[in-house]
Length: 331
Image (cartoon, rainbow, N blue to C red; front, side, top):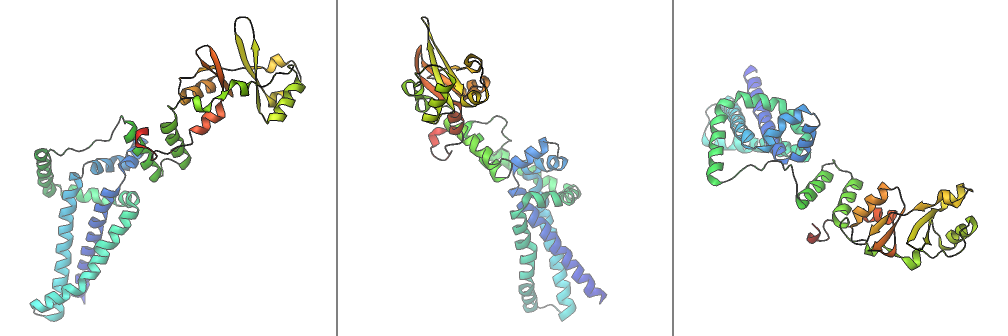
């Protein structure tokens, strides 16, 4: 009975080692370098220890290869001892039969199950098991070190170099990082859409968003509370653009309907100037100018000629539109 207990215990140890090394290998290859890098920069000590292994596979491949061989040897010994204990002399037929019977168990619990679990939750499983792996790595270092050196030699001869984590990204790599960040849960859907819109629409010209001057400055009545409110109701406006012509120039201002409703004082006190925007500037630049002046409307000029107005809300909405997948030319 004691012998069988030891054989079963040896078999379970072998399967458990196979479970561990097969699973953690999948976790290392599936783990997100981006997520680990961000976690490491925020002070996660475990991520800092894991990141060098993920960035350089040669550091963990040799350990896993040796560990898998040890696991297979322990499992094989347990099966062999069990077969001898059960059948006495171990013939070739019995050896093959026992191997065939035990193989599904080893495959399911030593290969399929751990790889599936670590594939679905690589970071969780990697962080949970990394301490034990680190201990095994140090223990097997005398055996794995020559393999690591040999791997480095092959890499140098073959011209294969490790790709470092990009610190300065071009537009296309940065777009890929943003998409990866959404997949990993680092970037929310709203943030992802906003960044997509910035990439696609930020550098587009203002022309398509400009409301022509003949439409924007349609208020021509006497400048009073009642006339302004009537004009706003008739055209469904939240802001009323007005112009004041002088001998030297034309002043462009606007009134907010909310100010007209809340204030009964002089109109001059609630009159808001429009920042001047040149037609050739980008949408993002125009939005930043309006944001800086806390203005809802901007006057668009072509040189000294007044073209029309652009609304800050329209500029902001364009940043939520577009998709990086629409055109490769956008990047």
